[in-house]
Image (cartoon, rainbow, N blue to C red):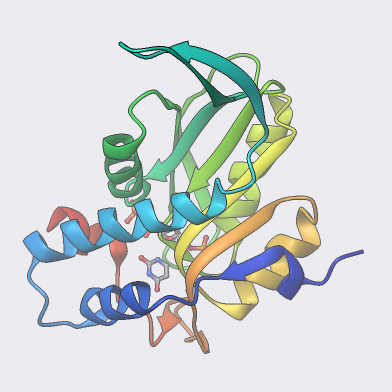
Length: 211
Ligand code: PRP
Ligand code: URA
């Protein structure tokens, strides 16, 4: 069986490092935070889709036929509300044909256990490449619960994209769902006693939406 490190790919790219540093800074205003979170989501999606299965196709240019490739499966983005919406907003700009489902949940502040409040997914997920989007992978509770829901609908290809991940969350997610791949832009040090990622960026939803 693969180790958590093997299934979790941490992006190592100068542009990603630059944008993550700006995203973390408490002086970064909400307008810039939005753009940075969306940009980083696009960069994560770009890397995570590198090896999606394709089939050959032929298209006609205005001049002649050209050989090409098309994705074999539909892509489904599933943001975890609220902050995941920022990620689907960004990715949809570069890949507007992606379908978008949604999972609404928030962490109870005392127990840190996710509380469900919304679910909208296509009926059949077995024939789709599913990307679960949440900027913060902290204890892993939200991601594990979200992937449970995706698997209940038959999802077989699940990749989680997280901007910042804690080692605790990566390990918990891998233990619960060893078949789910994870791409993250930063693996941080640890969680604090309130379940926040250190050094992290604070509350992603509050910073993206301003409330
Ligand atoms: C944040 C974040 C994740 C969750 C991660 O959402 O966007 O969904 O916490 O924590 P976990 O890995 O410990 O489950 P939050 O619950 O703050 O909801 P919000 O986006 O509505 O503010
Ligand atoms: N959710 C956040 O928004 N930030 C954290 O650090 C942990 C969970």
